[in-house]
Length: 170
Image (cartoon, rainbow, N blue to C red; front, side, top):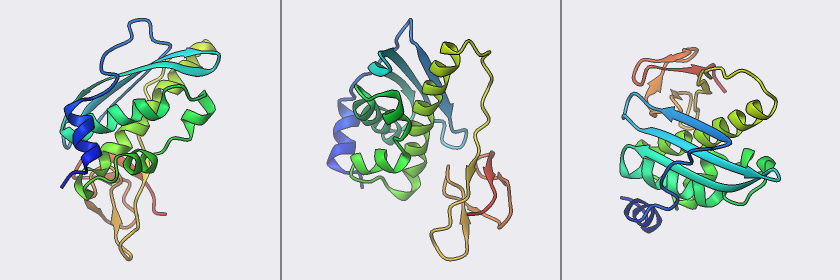
């Protein structure tokens, strides 16, 4: 069911922990499955010098967090902003369909940590972001929630399954 890479990153996760004086912190969670991720960044010369994570969740969520830190470490802020959930899933050699939402959480947490860093640098007050992603249309004309893969009615902006808001259709 899980690739060798997923199993490896679950059994021996890299970069686990917390950075006390982090330059940026991103925290996300999915109420459907209970996965919670925190990403901590240490930035030097606009590059990710150190990155750590704390994840409470399933094996896929832990593997996503681990490989995400491996991908992002050493990258410039601009390069790290381009890391997508598809990049994370690809690096893990795929995830089961019912676990793809974990790769969304990882990329979201990284992007939130970068935004937190940029906001701190610009002395902007911290605001709580509202997660909102677009429905997925990959199986005919049906819409699917990007977080939990549950079917969502055309035009819906709220997934009743995972209780998260989703944008209109693609």
